[in-house]
Length: 413
Ligand SMILES: Nc1nc2c(ncn2[C@@H]2O[C@H](COP(=O)(O)OP(=O)(O)O)[C@@H](O)[C@H]2O)c(=O)[nH]1
Ligand SMILES: [Mg+2]
Image (cartoon, rainbow, N blue to C red; front, side, top):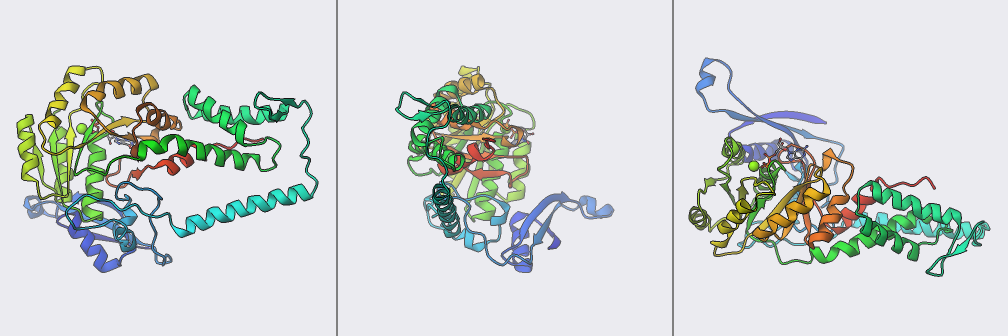
């Protein structure tokens, strides 16, 4: 592993230097603003110190991580991995994002897994594993024979779904599917259960993801402190620095002292123009001024979800626009279910059409993501998992959500 430091005016200059020096497989580890040493350094503008690393053992460029990313794939690893960048069209006028096929290696892995399961199953049958009902067997309502052991198996999976705080009615539905599809006497029952639950979760949320194309203007709304500004900065940085998109940021967050300053620092590092809009008319003019940009990110003041008057005021900003915006409701995954319900209801007035969940690093109970997709019928397009800009953000799509919700689920049965 080679690690090197670079001094540059801004992040795009640093990325250029790193690409030229370490090549396309380098990754950025950290960045910070520094002053030159000595008295005169104090009067010079601050520079950006970027640390990058190159793992010299790695020769194969990483493919895209997901199989259905509706947005450019984030991740510092994408900085200079050109194979990855080419998955997302650059240049051009529209914000069309090409769906990226699942990597062949991933398909291959899944195929091998299924083959392995089948062969383990057939050898189990040959070895005389009983396909007869266990002791205490009874016939369930669906006609399936279920022994005490079978009941314990379904019960264990139910407990695990409840543990990640998937709502009771969704859990009941998932377990009913499990009962219908997976025989508890099957020797690979836990593997099959996981696949069955993942398929059913995908089936439940897929309609929410079948939406119109991504829009040019993305506005982030949501309760105070959930991470709107941080998430916006992460996305704007990903689009600008890693995918070469031309972007602008407009903030209508003028309520909180420090809110604009925070965004100003991010905008400066990215080299992206930042505008402040004090009224809906100001906002419309600012959007007009950035007609030529591929994407416009809009930050908004955190309105308390209880204050419906302030939420309605936000709507007036989007109502004056000539083109529709993607209004994205940002929610924190460590929020109580009742408060999430209140937020989705109150912010309904701004006609949001997508969700982002932040702070998934702060909780083990991610059932809220499934709960809110099912409740609103809207997709969760990103999750964020830390405070680092721009790294701690990931695309979310049905299959990934299904894996995330069942990944830690491991019954001992
Ligand atoms: N742990 C963690 N903290 C986050 C995440 N996203 C944002 N934060 C922190 O949450 C706090 C509020 O973020 P901010 O973007 O100002 O929230 P806003 O009021 O909704 O704009 C800041 O301290 C952020 O660093 C995340 O994904 N994980
Ligand atoms: Mg903010």
